[in-house]
Image 1 (cartoon, protein in one colour):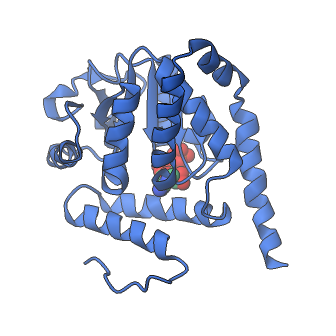
Image 2 (image 1 turned 120 degrees about the horizontal axis):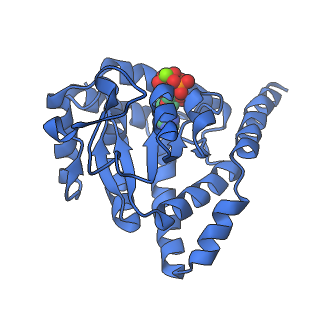
Image 3 (image 1 turned 90 degrees about the vertical axis):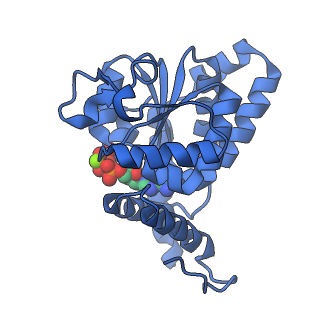
Length: 254
Ligand code: ATP
Ligand code: MG
């Protein structure tokens, strides 16, 4: 049930509205119960980050946009939470950066894949990769159903953006030689640490921001500037900076 009684001046309004989107996604078969728990872990970090896009996250968003624009075969990996929270913005980002959209679930289930595909198409997507028998290639480092990917999508990709990804799979993709862009509120997660670019921010804020930055960078039409942005980005330093912000949150008690 969606809670329509949240007062508009509630201090946690935005966070509560995102929860509503997830609950609605759960009821519509896009999200699994585990996804709700994973969101809770993210929320805890978001609270400590002040529920805003930090300057550090902004730098990572710019580097990620440049990476996507320079990629030969970029792919955006979509799971249930992403489809429930920001389908429209994800589709927009795929259009601005010419990235493919691939459904890639931790808890694989063809019915859910179809629901997610439908949600993306409803929000303007053309082709959606990775659904059902289309995911016929294998990531050799992984066991179980989680290793299946689309031979025309992630399997061929040079750059993959993995919002809210599990550490094992992110690591396996890096081993396959892919550049990984992660969106993860936890700067200590394995995903955050193995990715080449980690955006430590809530995906709900990242997406609209990234669409407008990518659009701006694309309009420059200047490969040298994009290459420079990527060269100057240091993921380890960026993660340390996010961690410092989280550690500084205790000052709020003074
Ligand atoms: P890992 O397996 O990489 O060590 P984990 O086990 O913490 O990390 P999972 O529980 O598999 O990761 O996935 C959830 C991750 O997604 C968490 O790290 C959480 O911080 C992050 N997350 C959840 N919701 C959001 C969100 N809305 N925006 C950004 N990140 C989020
Ligand atoms: Mg995990």
